[in-house]
Length: 80
Length: 80
Length: 149
Length: 149
Image 1 (cartoon, chains in turn green, purple, orange, brown):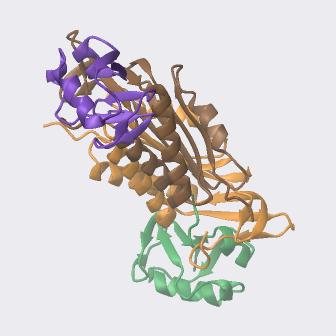
Image 2: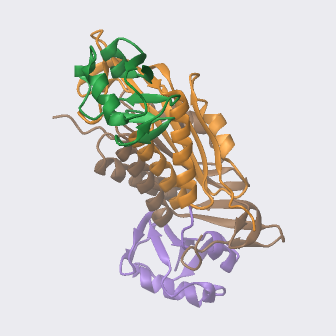
Image 3: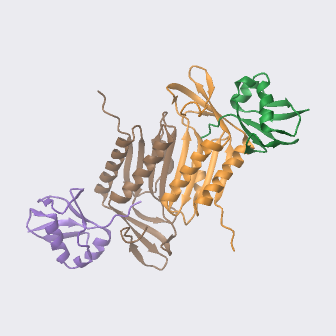
């Protein structure tokens, strides 16, 4: 089983992709998902606890991820 | 002897003029000048210590006024 | 009882150049006595390196909803505030505006506080990134957690 | 030794409508990363009374020199600040701008502080007066020492 994760900016560069299919069983916690992503090729360029948004809302790492959620890994923001 | 004093806004309305010839001997202090102006018709509508500018600079009431100075009586400012 | 008027007039992530005059017009109203506008513009130097341009990327739907949430919260704190906000994405040249915030109010303190609160929150919360293009040909994503942008 | 650059770009008391776009252009420069603009506009209500317009009078030469002094002092305190300031006189309609302050800087805090410092000092020090024209036909000079404007 795998779930899609959106990537942006420096994180998209790290993985060479704007979308990652992460092999993990859901439901799971955000922290579990991040752990798997960091073990994938390019994942060493991520910080230990990257920002994550689920369904376009900031979430903490103990939040549960469900099938169908829109999950995004968010690099340090730099708008303005 | 008299010296000209510029009036603006509500002070011009008070005296019905934009320029006043004030009968006083110069040099004198700003405070003396103000005292004479307040005794003139309309002068009762001025505050006891109105703001005064001499040669386009704010001055205190103990400053001396000379012949040829540009003297202005300044109502409370309300720009912006 | 009337629902309190929420004066978030316009919030958008855009790819076309920002039309400042149009945004100012949107914020206008007969009760407005003060308008404070903040513009972020691309400058030619950052951390001592000559910059040729700036590329902005956004997580579009979330950026727009976060920006709208910031605007709603700011109008909730400052009654009577009228807000217009646009952030641009894509590649911008030196001098072009990346973000425009127009805050209008009957009184000046509220207008100025409104514009400032929105830009500060935007910098913290809205998922937008910028990559500087240097004259040397290098490109680099800025990380405000590492350097002062 | 170089004389420190004084970036007071434009200060004027004007009778024609303020051209905001032109003022923004004047403040622009390749090193500018943030622009803060303040506009004072005529509103339709003051102290609960319906207003039809506003008449501004200035002690022209002193207003311009005080405004220039304020701009110089502000640029002296905030290195690298670029300032453009216009104050209008004459009779203005609801919604028209009476004053425009454009403050540009490499960084946003300085730009916002610059615009704020200038408008606050202008309100205290520049010999300009305004007379509100009410819908009732009355006209009254505003005295900020008596009522909150």
